[in-house]
Length: 146
Ligand code: DQA
Image (cartoon, rainbow, N blue to C red; front, top):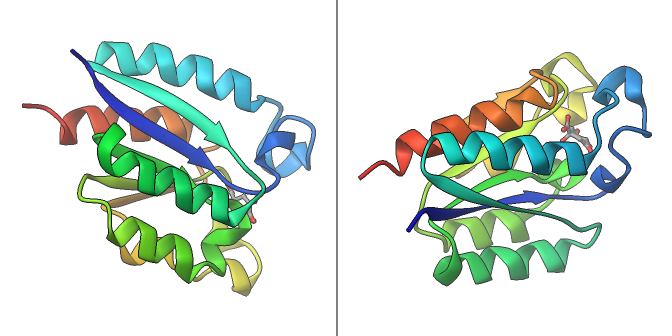
């Protein structure tokens, strides 16, 4: 049976494809879910992509992942730069964690340069556009290989 990986997305990412396309591109989160699902098959995992604008919902999904997922790929959106609660939840998860940012946060405003999630993440993708999600899926396949 293939291992399940949660791909969790934070605030405003529901607007992907329509929100600041000059920064985030024209692909939607449904497109991301579809191509990640295809890439996941090639590395023997299955992905479950979710999005919420609510910090507590993301914390709850990370708790759920403790029993339901082998790994987590997370783009926490703006919560990256503010949320100790998401960091604490990820610290209570045992599997690999990969952090994804569509834009290169280090090329942007200084408040985007710090990530609480990076204190826990096993790897970080930033500035690869939505392709960063596929690359994270490939890497997750490698990390979860038996
Ligand atoms: C983001 C970068 C964050 O700084 C921003 O708040 C987002 C998206 C990205 O994917 O590039 O919402 O995480």
